[in-house]
Length: 200
Image 1 (cartoon, rainbow, N blue to C red):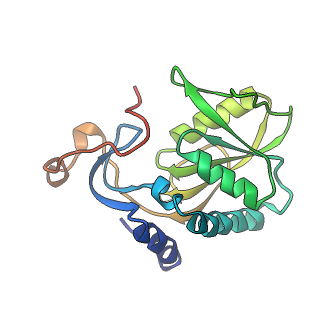
Image 2 (spheres, helix red, strand yellow):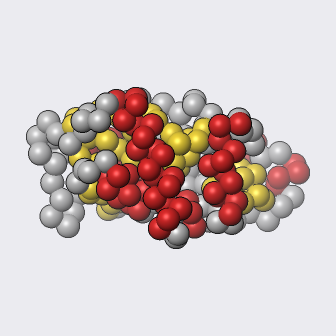
Image 3 (cartoon, rainbow, N blue to C red):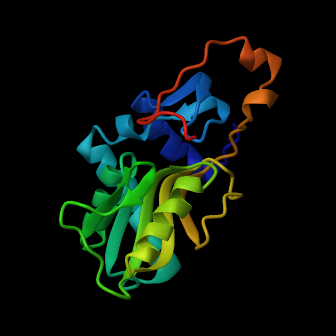
């Protein structure tokens, strides 16, 4: 995993929360990795969550302006707390999409005003797949996704979610297909620390 100087302060927050894990992990995408960032542990501390999401909100204001968005939308489960706190910091309403039979839908009385300028907020972006799926659901519901945001972009800027992505921290963390896992990593027991099982 590589990190630049600007990211070290943010990663210190993850380490302080025991949220930067090393080992052999199977990600929600089904890919394997030697590192895992558990954003749920970072968000356990409201003060830490406020600092991190406030910093992300500041980056979004710089990138898009103070009044660029009407609504903040997150994919459940991991994005819900991050999206809520970013929305609070930016004085936006916050809703979330959840998976039903593998597809993101809006329930619980949530609806999106037609043409609403939407910000899609994730906890971690790896391949960008769940972000793209959430954005597709927002589009189908009548929203206009202006941008995406995440606490962590672990693709090192390579993930394409179809709209501009602002991340608080950008890391290059290797990921491997199941058949290409290096021997040293394969020798370690694999765990699935995420909130859902493997995608099929």
